[in-house]
Length: 168
Image 1 (cartoon, rainbow, N blue to C red):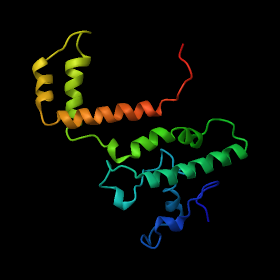
Image 2 (image 1 turned 90 degrees about the vertical axis):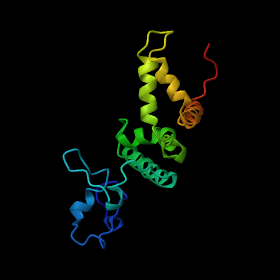
Image 3 (image 1 turned 60 degrees about the vertical axis):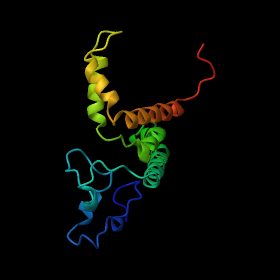
Image 4 (image 1 turned 120 degrees about the horizontal axis):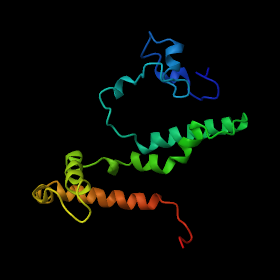
C-alpha cells in the first residue's frame, strides 16, 4: 500500500526486512510528501555520516520524475496553485547542475571565498583591501583548481540561463 495519498512510495522499499522494529507509520516518515517540520528528520542509516555527499544524477532524475507525477496528480485534483512538486520540477536544471560530480568545490574553497570577500567585496569600488592576502591566495596551489572551478561554474550557469531573442 502507499504511504500517503498520491505518492508512489511503498513501505517495502524502506527495507522493512532490514528494520524489523519499524512500523508502517514510521515508514511513512521517510516519504517527503508526508513529512512535516514537526516530525524529526530521519535519514537512511547509510546517509547519516555523509551529509555532504552529492546526489547522483540517476537518483535525481528518479526523484524529479516522482515530483512530476505528484505535480500531475495535484493538477488533476484541481490544485491550480504552484505546488511544491511543480516548483521542484521547475528547478530541474539547477538541481541537475548540483548533482554533477564537478559541482563539488575544490579543497579549501570556503577559505578562498572568505579571502575574496575580505579583499574585494568589502573594499571601496575600484580598490583592493589586503593585497598581500589576495596575492598569497593567487600564489597558492589552491589558485589553479579554484579558478578552473569558478570558470566551469560560470559556464554551467550561463548554459542554464533562458535564452532570449533580443534584450533591446
